[in-house]
Amino acid sequence: MDHHILVGGGGPDYIEKQWLSLKYANRHGLVAGATGTGKTVTLQILAENFSNAGVPVFLTDVKGDLSGLAAAGSETFKLHEAFTSRAEKIGFTDYSYDAFPVTFWDLFGQQGHPVRTTVAEMGPLLVSRLLELSEPQEGVVNIAFRVADEQGMPLLDLKDLQALLVWVGENRDELTLRYGNVSVGSIGAIQRRLLVLENQGGAELFGEPALALSDIISTTADGRGRINILASDKLMGAPRLYATFLLWLLSELFEELPEVGDPDKPKLVFFFDEAHLLFDGAPKPLVDKVEQVARLIRSKGVGIYFVTQSPGDVPEDVLGQLGNRIQHALRAFTARDRRQLKEAAETYRDNPRFDTVEAIREVGVGEAVTSMLQAKGIPGVVERTLIRPPSSKLGPISPSERAAVLANSHIAGKYEAKIDRTSAYEILRERADVAAKAAAEAEAKEDELEMAEREYKAARRYSGTRVARSTSRSSKSDSFGAAMTQVVLKELKGTTGRRIVRGILGGLFKAR
Image (cartoon, rainbow, N blue to C red; front, side, top):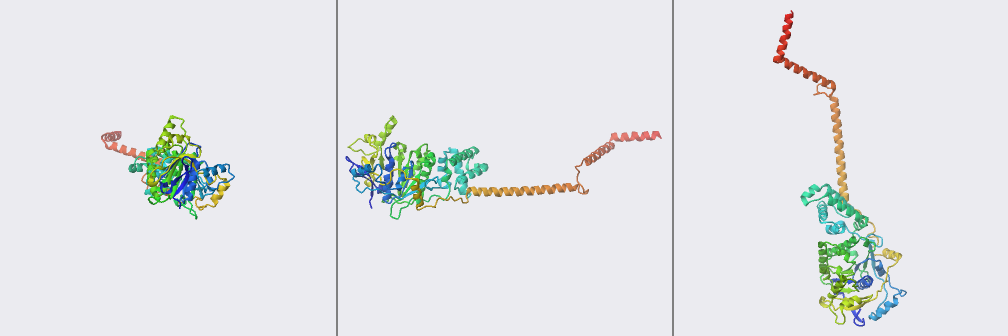
């Protein structure tokens, strides 16, 4: 087995082969350059090489061009002569056209197998990043995840999280005492962000069956690594969703794969195209997480290659861990561009044959300034390199060809049907139904008691022995008359009353 892959030819006449050592391929890399300088073709030939070496690959297809990996190049292609001439120039004597084992994936399930994860697997940090939440709102999400764990409510899809947030809002007084402030405003803001995500198609990302990592870390019967291509042209319309999903995938690889130390070749190579989207506006905890993953995941046998326009798009702490570098042309139109160009050149070991700054500025399409890790992981001297031509088709395949690849896929039918098992939404709905039923039964019993009491009270009017008082008008009059009689009798018992009686009696006796 070859222990290295061919990147291209360097040296004065481009005849010195430039190799990327498989032993150091898991120490990550960078493919940078301005638009139109050849980054996509470089990505394509790296994927081909890794596949032939038995290394599975995961990459994103931002423009749709990389689907050509599934089909062989053709002698009728307009660049056939240019490709064969370049192969001859760099001494690539066994150059030939070939198709590669490709598995297409698509978050929206349109151009590939659906790829999903669960809300619980993504976790509160990445969910908050996806929704662009403030710190108080992120705190509410953390409380919701804790409640779901404690009460055994699986969070699988968006409706689970939405239902749980409603429950959290209804029980916010109790939760505030235990976990901290839970405001209605924060819950409302989170729900609005979830609605926006749902309108963008983000609901398709969450659910089951969730992606099994074994399906992307696999090889064919003849030992070639499968190339997993995520259709990202539509996904780029929601850049935060794109970046968060890929970061989640990296985190899952980091958490689930066992330690392998320094293998002879990677278990998986992961290409992160448009890498700047991962870091634009990212909070420090998230950047720290990326740095941690990049630093430690190589011991799991995974190599990460960031693909972006400028090395300045990648934070320094992450950039310092990217040992294999392919730098296509950078344009210096502004003072900022010139600073970035100079900074990019300073990261390479100088070559006495040329000025690195000028080389990065001058290299043409299909050419790059490269530096690969050598023995003991030491960066190689920078070289101007002519990138080897691709063996697969340059450009996208047709929809019918893509459909044929999907139909013949080794995982055809596994992810297409979505499963909706009992989770937080169903549990809370069942609780609500039980509570509603109990309330209805209690209300019915109360109505029955009130009816019985009314009937009892109405029946009392016809029973003289049990009537304590009457509410009828005549009984009121009788009561009033009785009361007046009592007053008169009281007065008659008094001094004034006795005088009146004596006066009356005296008059009567005098009359006699």
